[in-house]
Image (cartoon, rainbow, N blue to C red; front, side, top):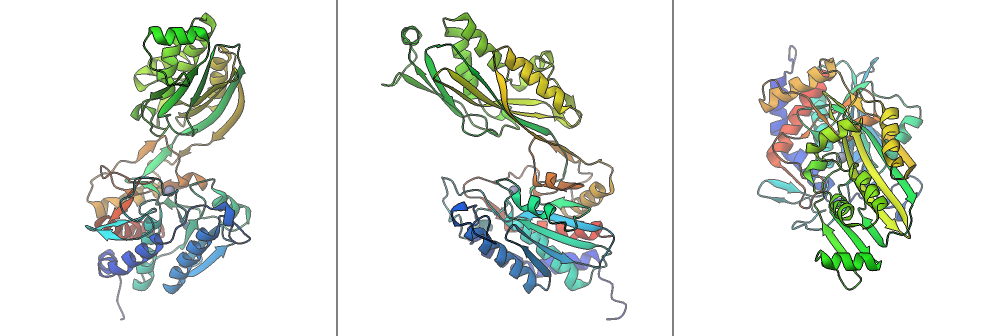
Amino acid sequence: MRGYRPTKEHLIKYLDNHYNKLEDAVCHLLSLPSVLDETTASKDAPFGYDLAVTLEHFLAEAQGLGFRARNLEGYLGFIDFGPESAQTVGILGHLDVVPVGEGWTKKPFGGQIFNDKIYGRGAVDDKAPLVACLYAMSAIKELGMPIKKKIRLIAGCDEETDFRCINYYKKQGLSIPDYGFSPDAEFPLIFAEKQIIHCTLEADLPDYGLEISCGNAVNMVPGSATVKFISPYWLRKTKAVRLKLDKNNSCLINGRTAHASTPSEGKNAAKSLLAFLAQNADSEQFKNICRTLLQFAPDNEFQPALNALGLGLEDETGILTCCLTMLSLKNNHLSLSLDVRFPISGVSKSVKAQIEAIGARAGLQMTSYKYKDGLLIEKDSELIKKLLSAYSEISGEKNPAPIAIGGGTYARALENFCAFGPAFPGGGYPAHQPDEFISRADLLLLSKIYALAICNLAQ
Ligand SMILES: [Zn+2]
């Protein structure tokens, strides 16, 4: 076919015509469980048998489409395509999924379709988006779209837990893609992710006559708190204020859980409990401790309080959020965990010092500290312009604006990467939820957006 020059229109038409194959591949992949299982880990299967099988299956699918694929000792796989070039475009997704959890009405590993929705753990996070990228690459290859750069699609196997997959890759001395995207969050595109501190503060206290247990994940707003009243004072007091206790003199306080990056979407049970204790304790000292701890659980309307504490950071990437996520008082030992997310312009050292200074008012010492760097890609960079233009062209959204978030995405793992899809604005994002699904229409759109994006980036 001399003179034949494939165009974007050909590419889109090709994806329409071959949608069934993409859907079959997605359903098959969703039927394979791929939850981390260290009990079945072995050489070449560091994350367990199921993930090793899933990775092999995905790479075989890629080979079936005519790609070069490599399994990196079970940590991850990568698929290469395109001419050797000075720069490599990367796509970073993952095959591992979070545990199934409760509340499913469909088979979590069925890959079944009801009412034009494909159900299964991994339907949006992140198996289907990954397959959409693979089939986008396949369309580009089959049509002979003009691309000038090498493309490397990386399928990680430990995104949901510890990034051990991509960290292993980085240690192997393999070439690292120069820029790219991760199809593992939302559209239009995430240009900035806040810096994150996870820390624990502890203190030994005098006997205040009670025990507390609250929260079980450092990155979640605690949805409930249990307090056990022991001293005669507390037993009298709780009776006087008509607080209902069970037969163990305990009381369950309910809140509403949410991700710690958006604390105002939840209701922090630790906060309700501390407010009660600060009001009703007999010891002034303990009241003060509770008031200090409450400062670690500000609401959004509490922003002036953060300013007063020297934590009122704000820039175009958002405000500082602080969430008291775990609280325990047992045998007079107090321990609490914080999830603090702050904008790109903030300095981690001074935020840390500020947290320590507030904690010191309650006699607390920081006993563990973990810091995750933020992410910022210039809004007018080529990367962002090219991705947004692909998104705009297919979605029809005019002048889509990149967004900043508090959450950390997989894109942080590699420099010059940003999260790009798969959730459409206003469409909901059932990741990590029961009955996770992707609609057929969205899956087709994804393949088109990613195909155009890859073409744009490979110019
Ligand atoms: Zn994910």
